[in-house]
Length: 245
Image (cartoon, rainbow, N blue to C red; front, side):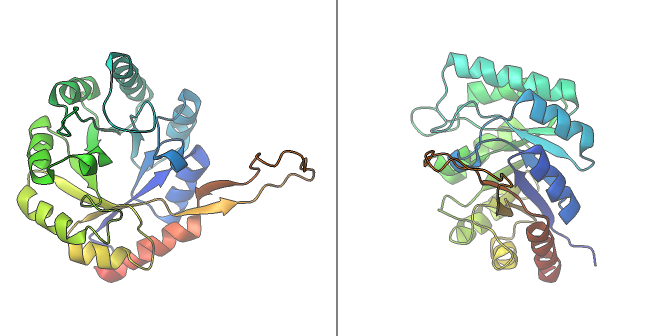
């Protein structure tokens, strides 16, 4: 059975992206530094992932962790990163910026949109940090983005489902709302139904244990294990969405 829902997997490495593809993901959002909310991946990560991935590849354009108020230097970094994504043949980019008042930074975002050119564009969860979500939606629509990744302004998409549903109604056919934050195989179908979102975004992550035979016990702060997208977690999300359909 084919699901009427699209599943995007948030991937923090080339290995994660391939695991997402193997598990049945429809699209990948690639980034680094998952624990800090994600930042733009390295050139090498981008190039290797683009060379090996067959499903659509979107890249997070975020120069640092923290808020979404960017200075001129950070603007230049984002513009150059978007240019690299175009050169490598990525399918899209994931952008977002706010001004000091908590509104969408339209001048900067217009520059980012112009740099993206023919690439698809998702507006990321800077949207959830905006002071007025319905007004922010209208601003993102004027930019020409294809979709907004959102938890409905809540800590997770399950808690924000009611707001997401309101935003879906407001958006109509002008832009897609993609529910994300805190999704797993146990709640993704509920969020899909309650939010009315047809696109869902999850990390499907699991801890990967180090294979090192020797680990220096004196290096207490050194983490040998890491987090990576898990094939079985992705497959479970996909199956849950099929049941929701």
